[in-house]
Every structure is written in structure tokens, then in C-alpha cells.
Amino acid sequence: MPVSATAIPCLSDNYAWLLRDAATGTVAVCDPGEAGPAIAALEAAGGRCDLILLTHHHGDHIDGVEEVRARFGAKVVGAAADAHRLPPLDLALKPGETVAVGATKGVVIDTPGHTVGHIAFHFAEGDVLLCGDTLFSLGCGRLLEGTAAQMFYSLEALAALPEATLVCCGHEYTESNARFALTVEPDNAALQARAAEVKAERAAGRATVPTTIGEEKAANPFLRAGDVARLAAIRTGKDNFR
Image (cartoon, rainbow, N blue to C red):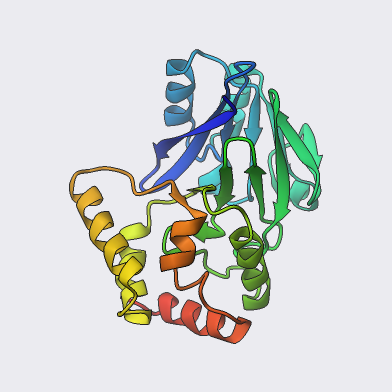
């Protein structure tokens, strides 16, 4: 069995992700924005953390790094281009390079838009995508540093992954994303079904992620934009949506 991913709720609406390689027992955590929940999850999983994977530099994704590193002696992995504003990296990677979680290799994908140095990690063996704040269930990240063109091509790269790929994103935004998405594609049957599912999941206190690339291609208006101008228009609409 290859690498598996488990969500760790933290802060008000963030998710860190715990990865375990079944063949070796190697454990990694992605984007520990809060130390307490990450450490508790790691202790419950056996008290081991070999790697800390970082998608981008925002505090709600890195603020727990030093405490987790000190507790477990984990190595920190992130984007070489963003090394100047990430916690000190033990492994600085460029797009196309790989990181091994035990016997399973993850490929670094360049995904600028939310930030200019944002990356994602794709573990083909396990169908796991750690996409931070680039792709959300039924949404995408705000363009805080990058451009609509950058986000469009980042989303295109993620949409090209196998449809069974699990979208392990950084936030529980799906319910509000669904409300906006229905204003963009009110007649999309897949979106209507997903929105109803999400409403029920949140009412029951359950997480709405991970989703899959296939589900997002069917229902997420940002993955369905078609061109940069359309993506920019949808993103502006979401920024102003209340």
C-alpha cells in the first residue's frame, strides 16, 4: 500500500495533512499552521514525524513548523524559490524535483497565483495531491501575489492529473465556495449535487475534503473557466461575494 493522507484540522478552518508510507512507516506532515493539533495527530499515529512539507510561506501554514521540528527532529522541505521566507529548509526543491516519503516519491509542481512561490506535491502512488491554497474544493486561492494567468496555468497543471487524485487542500471553505459557484453555474447538475452533499456534511460536522480532481473538473467553476479572462472574472466575483 502506498502513501496515505489524513486531514488534521487546525486554527479556525485550516487543514494540515498527515502522510504515512505503509511500506516503511515513514511519516510526514504538510503545512502545520498550528503545532498543537499536528503534534497530537502525530503522537496518536505513533509518535514519529520524518518530514515537514510546505506549500507556501503564509503563517497559517508554517507557524507550527519549529515546534514540530523540535519535537520529532523532522526535516523541513519547501520551495527553493521561497526559501528566504520559509522556515529554514533542510531540502529546498525546484519544480519537477521529487521528495521521498519512505518508498513513495512526490513530484513538486509549480503552482503560483495565490503566492508567487507556491508549490504542490503530487504522490502518484497513493493518488495524493497536497495543493495548499491553490486549489480548493469548488474554489481556488485568492490572487494575493500572483496573476490570473499564473493561477489559470497552475490550475491547468493540477487538472491534468489523474481524476482519482485526492485534492488535499489547506482550508475548509467548501460550503461558502459552493454558494458562490452556484451563482456562476446554476444549471450544473454535478455542482448542485456536490453543494447538497457539502451542506449535509457540514451540518453533521464532517470535513468536505479530500475531494478528487475528477469531482473538481465536473463542479468547480475555476477549473472550468476555459481561459485566463474568464478565470479572472470569476475570481473577482468571488472576491466581492458576500
